[in-house]
Image 1 (cartoon, helix red, strand yellow):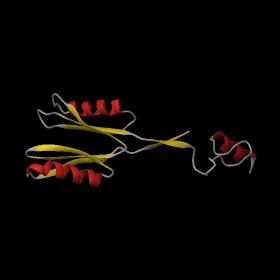
Image 2: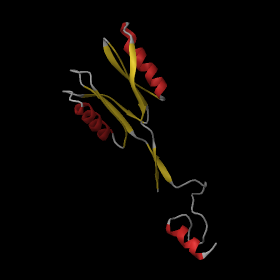
Image 3: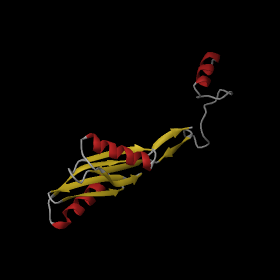
Image 4: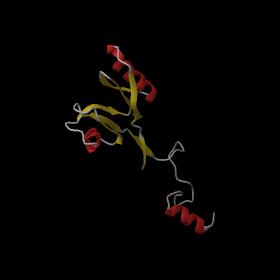
Length: 138
């Protein structure tokens, strides 16, 4: 390996001082997966909803969901659901709203719709999303 190429690769961390590629013992990039939070807030007065995913703390997720709900002009927003490394869904019909979590968006949507329709109403899934883990190199 030429000295110029080796110096360039060392400067960006791809090779060590011996000129060998840097990696973990298993040959994978060094780092860790960080689980993230999500939350859903709703205004009981208007039904308006605010959502967020990918936050690094429960407090951050709650705050962002409340802010998103309030940005739409809804009064008295309240956090209805907080989830960690899961998927969540909201289903609504004429008689109410249901919030559910599950391991997939599809399953969370099914559960929310079923819960919403328990009183015989026809409901539709309005929102579903997952709070996914983030890989942090280090």
